[in-house]
Image 1 (cartoon, rainbow, N blue to C red):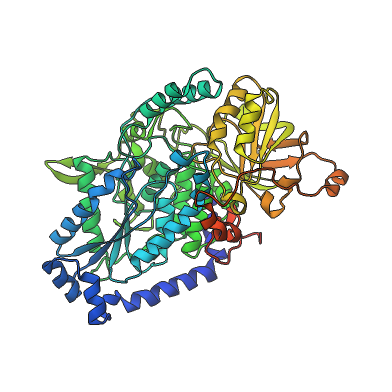
Image 2: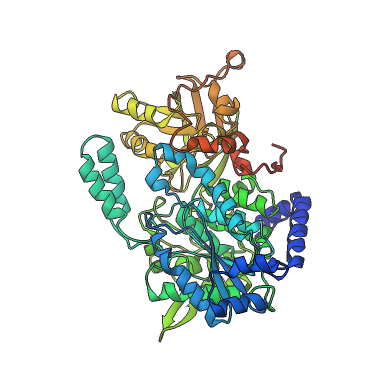
Length: 611
């Protein structure tokens, strides 16, 4: 193992010792009680299987075979989840063929940041994760189950599933995705048309036509944003059927993988010899594996928040220093949009998840000695599935990349380090995704231009007020202010100005999503403005220096002048009590910092450095 990976893993385990032991003790208590259908009263149990057929009722009554919970994010509005519509039928049939049963235990909400981007609905996005976690727990609360299969793909859904699943840590869980849609309009062309629209050179109809060509059918969006980062990390943590992340929906192979997930879930319950609860799979080693894989593939910055929350649900404390230390030794192996022009279908064809995981294991950057839902050892995930004569099998991932512009080896990476850096300084702590940013733009020193919402920046752009070097400061976008929405709508405007030769950057206490692009952006800054963070003291014209090379973010205001300043209140006029946002007031008020996962559960949270 690489010395830094070992050191970070041991550091996480040491700082989490008390918390992890308490978590495992809770899991053992739940395991020792077993599925509570065995101790339910006749009336309770009758309610639990009333809707089942006679054979399923008998199996559940005897308690000798596994009963699987199905928890799904299905809806037919969102392309990523439409394919899940018929998965429960496939799972029930496959479970019966194993002599087991499966019941649809519950659904969780699935919202799309692509639909809500730049709208009021986006302010519900971050805390939909915690709602999904709670909904997962409610679905499992009947305690009728020996294992669970979670159906879902997108941004907050997989983290929410994991947090909810870990609260039932004595049960095995397998996550089952739907797969990506077929490739559409090339990403470079999509970005070009968006910038033309932002400049007023084309109309809405032309923009809509281009977007419809990019997002055109069932399946996950094909760029490497948060949704597809989720799938990559499920492979690296051993929570998928191996190689299932990017298999297209509505294909025989996808159906075969769903059946295989069901069969495996039946085999790894406490009723058999291969008992593999999620509390065993999610540990300090698998969490580090997830972070390293995220960094090696240029994945979503959202996971610098979500994986901290997931870790906390499993009794571990991780922070941005862990991410930064691992990033410094993790090579960048992929070029997938927004870190390149290829999409995940192209990535899969070039070698895919198995290629990446094999390379990282070979470089000593992933722990191979881990439990997975497929058995001991991460090497299970260096293989890819295929159908031959209608039989599912696996073969080793390709030794050579089929396209070296998309996928490279650990020996010859695109960059020597991963794509995420920690920024510290007199404005607080933040992160920056550098993998998509040309190194010429990693450092900028320029006057601040202050905005308290996204629309104000667009208005200034339309008026021609931003034709100069500047650092856009977009504040009052943190978890406790408005739910920490993604600010991806700003990307075309800032990108246009950068292309014109101006030095521009973004500093914000909000998020920039898995689609963070070519403009340097210090994001997730805290203390946030709503919490009287120093970002609220900035004024137009203050000099800000963002330096991703040395990991710093500072204002250059004289100390005496700074001491006289107070925090400016938000000038934003939008209400936080419309479009459902009033229902999330308690989540905003109780949210922890981004570096502790922006958690709204009321857990005690702290970082290793005492922050």
